[in-house]
Length: 94
Image (cartoon, rainbow, N blue to C red; front, side, top):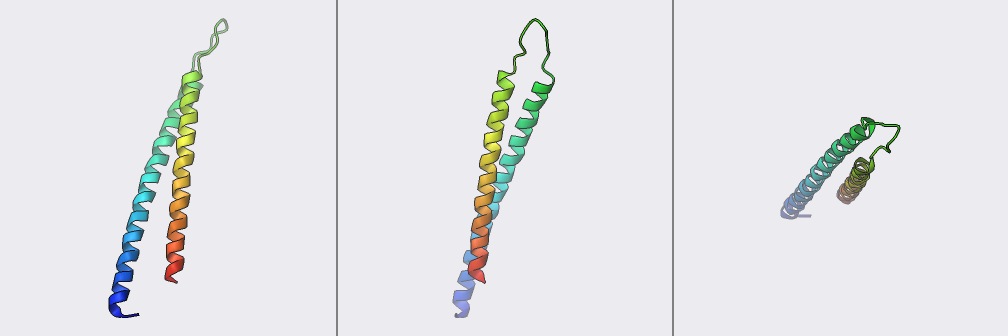
């Protein structure tokens, strides 16, 4: 492979790694945000007032917790896919 081709190949690899890194950062932000939402919902559930003569209203925090869980699962899947892409890229270099 010529020196010029090697430079182009290296530039393409660095560009791909940079894009994958951006995807990782975005997904990690999603994980962080989802965990904060899940924590807030858990605190609302744990501190909900309990009265013997009335049912405790937990619908909103439970729905929020389920939404946060789905968001966390989606972010984790993005991380898995980005990891696979990075692994494929590294395998291609070897």
